[in-house]
Length: 352
Image 1 (cartoon, rainbow, N blue to C red):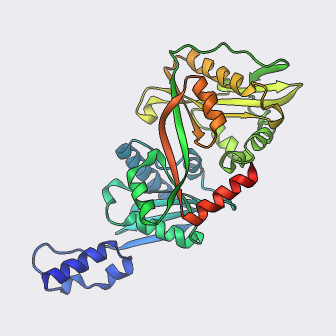
Image 2 (image 1 turned 30 degrees about the vertical axis):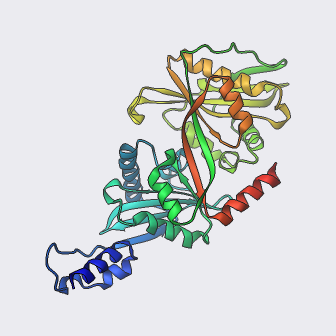
Image 3 (image 1 turned 180 degrees about the horizontal axis):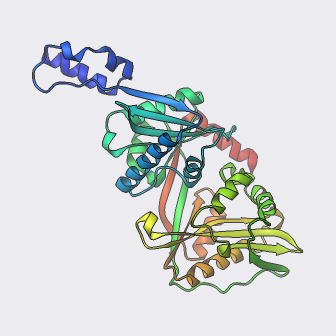
């Protein structure tokens, strides 16, 4: 009898909550430690209230401190703090009414499929909650989500493998010392450089950003609200936001960012946040010149190191950054079901 009960307990640990709730544990004639019934629910929200937002932010902070990497990207964090994205969906997993897990579903990429980020509170891990969240995400998205694992977290990789997902994309984090020599700044002929002016340059910047990142929806689909929200962030500094003009027309930009030590648990770190060049100006050396302008600015601020993110498939950009002294530091990995991975590859061919 004891063996049978143990088997049931283990099954209930990974089963849906309806199974757990249906078992009248208090009436089972077992010896040893009592088995407590746990109520687990997954709820889908279009809009989170203030209390739910605070709970998610606390969960993210706890996971970040444990794992050494934030489980949600900046775009998701901004939308959380500023009231959410009307197209996105949030999944809240509670254990006995305590928030134990969260998933964010971004459905905006209709070709490659919804992008998903999920996190389980460190205290509530190894209880099947990641699988419960991903199962609910699969139901919500028709079985074709793309799952991000920031920092290549092994738990996320194991979860993806359990669902038969494959690695379909990698985003490199690259870094370089700002103490090392930098090439001098040399702008292409006919190009002038100035700083971004809030309240004046937003429309022109959004246009060039959309054109420069036409095949990268995560960046190219930014709206005015996305831009203005970042202008409200404590780290925003127009002195580090460079605009390049040719014949009074915006030709490219380099937006830098500084990660502060109080928020990130390390010495201030400069970032090549976004570099974009109008397609008509590509191949002129403007991208390299803009990158150097930002790096010189970050070094002048007394920063010791700079970092950036680049898609592993963007070999031309990687070669440029390596020529400027950057090396791979870390990697974010995207997983998807095989069918979604095929669709993503086909979309890449059509867009090339």
